[in-house]
Image (cartoon, rainbow, N blue to C red; front, side):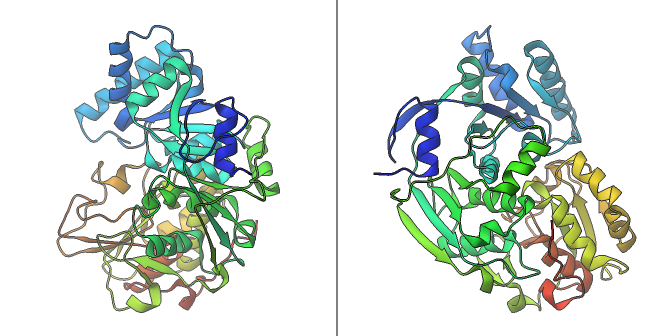
Length: 427
């Protein structure tokens, strides 16, 4: 009997020839990460454990991304504690404005094909875009990893999803992830691993692949993994990753379910207010007026997302009464966008830029607070009621292209209906 990608990675990291779904294994970790929101728990637990020798500290990163910049004294003190801890233990530190954890880890060359990477955020599944097993854990779990380099996991069942055909111009991985949420429902694939395969994946660039894996968190997935190809290997080499060890599923691997999605026929999708799995095509809700637009977050704050928006808004202005905020996923992405002239295009159109981080997405920094009755169209991963601090506002989700097109017209808009909305990445 063959093995899936997840089973192969977990078997290797638990020093076993083969594991099966349902097995509980103790695995060696390749890299670990904690965000500022979970660092206090981790540091306190390390103190309780009396851990003197944190043998895995050098393979652990601390990322200041949620309280970036810190909105209050308590958050600032958390950062002070993190800086001192990193200096004392040799933990890698990403300070304010350097970027979101799920962007800076691969950008920093901290993971590669075949790795097991864990982090204190559910969207650690993003690392599957690089043929790695990435998954979210708690801060107290990271403390154990830092002391031992190991973690226990239950081997997940795997869902195989074949994507047939490249996405249409103007349709992006975000639309596919929303389609998946509409099909399976929020938490509908709880503790499952997803293997995305097929020509639809092969046609995607790395930015879109990261979105595809990232949004699996809303499905409840334990991991979302792609096979490695030449695009993967070139990207990893360009970012200084260690030599890759690509992993492929066996032809006779056992899957809990296999489905085929005709991605070539997919239209732009949106999630309606308060529910990530209430999905409709964008053209069905063009009557919905919007007042705020957000492009960014760990799901869609990458360079191609900013390019999508710039292609639509170049030489134009936001609709009267619409505000737009853009938060790049990392400082590097901001600088790349600056060099390409994208920052100027969007600023001239009326958008404002935030420092790279998660604060705007989760409402921690209070830099995007909608008014009562306002509707926000966002590229974020979640649209729960009150997510942006005001429970009397609505949040809808869509791709960067859909968000930009909606900001241009003042209503939720299928990006393919406006000039520039059918832009396609050609890298």
